[in-house]
Image (cartoon, rainbow over all chains, first blue to last red; front, side, top):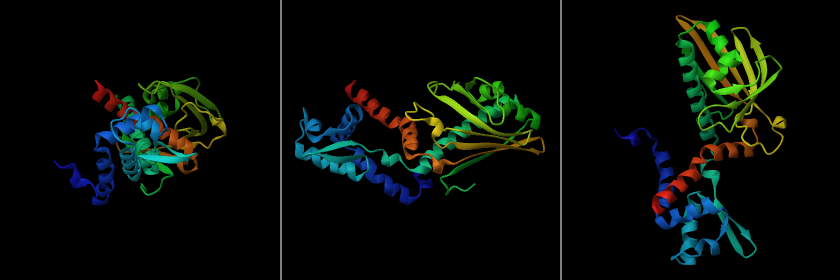
Length: 114
Length: 152
């Protein structure tokens, strides 16, 4: 059964850049670094990396384009951090709480119907 | 059900149990604690607060704090609460709460229970962010998993 059949084409279109951004080991590595070490400058991100600073900068632009990271200026450097906006959508938030209610009501059902 | 709004959640379930039974499960703090998985310190009463530690596995660090609004016997039970009272940095009491309403009605063979939670639009953005971090904190966790996987 293909799950994609049930997904609106627009959603697939939205999701493609995200997965394409994730589908690269250098970029995954950058996300892991930002995730574990918090906001970092390019210098810190490039430290001990076999990849050049310019290449890292390009990878960060791709990640930013997919909404996964964001940057701000600090003096002469740009500081990069993970961006939660990708997941910020209010509907996702409600969908999660909605699922929690579904679970709670199923527990209530078991409780009163036993 | 209006899926376009971001302010409220509506749920409906038909329970094969008498209305009085469902009412007790909702409003008796011990019974509520049992199915909701919380450890409420005191009973529910209109205008009164009660709180308790969540006992749901993985969420034991959370405290549930409610302010009961109405208890109309076997018809309506409602309370205000904070949907994500995790490590509040500010004064949680000063923040907007959502309103949870349980409405009961008889149906053949049981009870229809409607649950509404509303007021999400008034929640401070950072509260939603926090909720995001806790749950999709899965996200950070996933990256850590990838890291463990690739370095292991």
